[in-house]
Every structure is written in C-alpha cells, then in structure tokens.
Length: 163
Image (tube, helix red, strand yellow):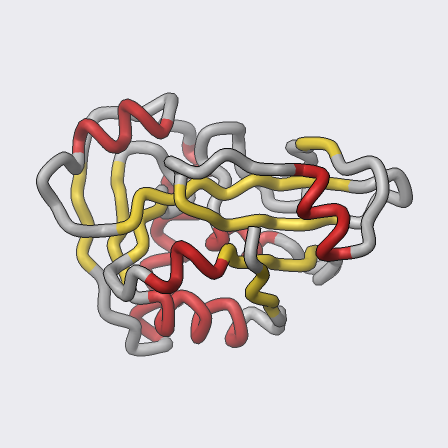
C-alpha cells in the first residue's frame, strides 16, 4: 500500500461520513485483479463491478461503471455516446493506479473533465455495488443511490446507458 492510496482511502471515508452514506467494508490482502478481489468477498451479496477509465481521440475522458462479468463493447459505447476512437487510459485524472480505478477517484479530479456512465443492467439488480475504495486492500459495498449521491456531491453528473 502506498502512502498516497492510504491518504486517498481515509479522505474517501471522511467524505462518506460527511455525506451520511452508509456502507459495508471488507478488509483483505491486496487484490491486483477483479478475480482476486471477488474471491476475497465470495459469499457476500453485491454486484461485482469494474470501472474503466477511457479517453477518445479528442482527449475527452470517460468513466464507465459496469458489472465485471459483462464484456465492454466499445463499438456500442461509441454509438451510444457519439464518441470516436475510444481507448482505455490511466492518466493523472483520477490519481489512481490500474486495478484501483473506481468512481471514488473523481475526488482527485479538480478539472471536472470526466463524463461518468453507469450500465443499466448493473443497476437493475438492486443490490449493493462493490468497488475498491481508492485502495486495493478493501472492498466497499454501497447502494447505487448512495454512490450517485457521492458523485453529485463531488460536482459531477452521470448518465445511465444500456451497454
């Protein structure tokens, strides 16, 4: 665990408390992949998510949040959003390393230059969503409504699309 990720984790917990957002946290060894993280939370009810940070040819940034069991169809995403030449990108926009990307990284995006998309299928399940909370030694479970409350409180909007 880097010092930066420990600070980002504590800042997130402080922000969730300030917003009166309820969550459950599971502590576990560092998880480098979604498969590892999922193994540490086996048996607990929650949508296992993946968050992909993307950019297009014009350097517009996108955060796509979806069920980690679902395959991302870049062509469909481009058609739904009107973007061109989408690629996966980890830049300094979120202040997070690969494998830790989550919607909570928007706390580090002072430029507010990220468009956030949720896949509808994931939200239809009406059970908690799971993410790394800016560090890969924990998994947080929280409701979609509370996650969206967090996103709004950071000054961002989001869209729900059917991928």
